[in-house]
Amino acid sequence: MNEVVTQIADRVGIAPDLAEKALGMMLGFLQREADDGPVAKMIEAIPGGSDLVAQFNGEGGAGGGGLLGGLMSSLGGGGIMGLGQQLMGEGLGMGEITSLAKETIAVAKQYAGEEVVDQVVASVPGLSQFV
Image 1 (tube, one colour):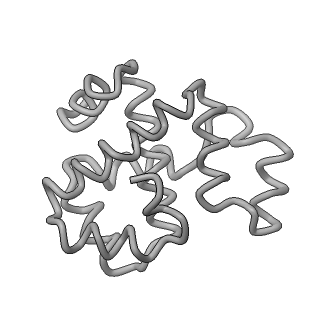
Image 2: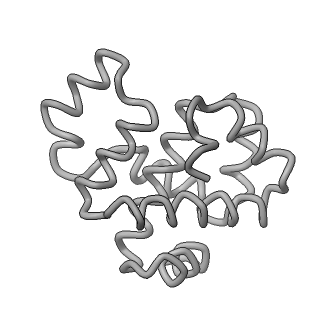
């Protein structure tokens, strides 16, 4: 478990293994949805970021969102709401998801710099209202 995951788990008040999975899911979502250049820089700058994306790649555990999640993704209805549903499927509440989003962005800014992270956030429709 790397220190970034521990830091986020402590700040959000969730178990480190859940924080690790949720962070990997969020970074995987950003990798798919955000502009390629800035998001690649951001993920590479976060210690263990690339590994988390490779391990969890934005997918929930068993079933990865089930039939409804798969159907929403195939219809293009995933996006930020789809990620929220996946995280709720992992047992997180809306307050925890919001805190997790804010902490993920704060950590990303700490390692990748504000300008890069702001480009990532601006390139994902609807994300700015959560962070």
